[in-house]
Amino acid sequence: MPLAFTAVFKEAPEGGYVAFVEELPGANTQGATLDEARDNLRKAVGLVLEANRVLAEQDLAGAAVIREPLLLSA
Image (tube, rainbow, N blue to C red):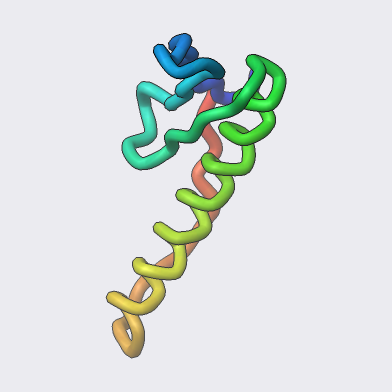
């Protein structure tokens, strides 16, 4: 079973929705509709994961490290 995150959607006072992932700080967005907020949140998660990868690669540049896949099950 793949790892699942918790998406939270809250109606914004000015209209639309604010969205974030509880388990992934920085993965937050908004959308005019709930469907748009969902789509934007999927993109935000991808961007946060990619940014974290780039930062880690920069921080570890030149270091002797072992990289391997980490598979998680729920």
